[in-house]
Length: 131
Image 1: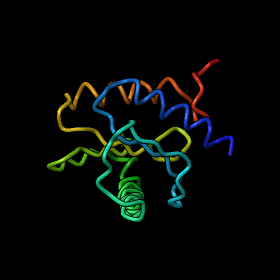
Image 2 (image 1 turned 135 degrees about the horizontal axis):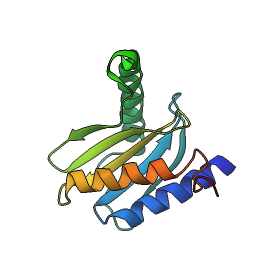
Image 3 (image 1 turned 180 degrees about the vertical axis):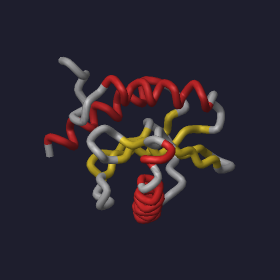
Image 4 (image 1 turned 90 degrees about the vertical axis):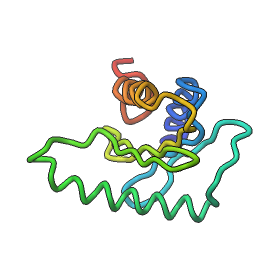
């Protein structure tokens, strides 16, 4: 329970980074959602069941990439672009995954840099590193 609260803090911070961030979730590699939230008044395109399905797909895809880390380096994030939104998958230091959906209206590179910087300064509990 405390991990969910701490990740909730991280998710809230992400929504403050950019108005184009619409949904965020942290999941472990078993597919258990540890925390999730969406920007107020955001229409979610997928049902909870469909969201869970995409999470399992993201976990599987990310796991398949890890076997090549020794040759190409660790993955920073993946980005899937759809007509209605963009979805990023970002590994966390804890080994969990952060999934974020972003409106197509924003500047993709700038938003991703903000998210990656936020993940870098926070440890696995969602608190500022060194605090």
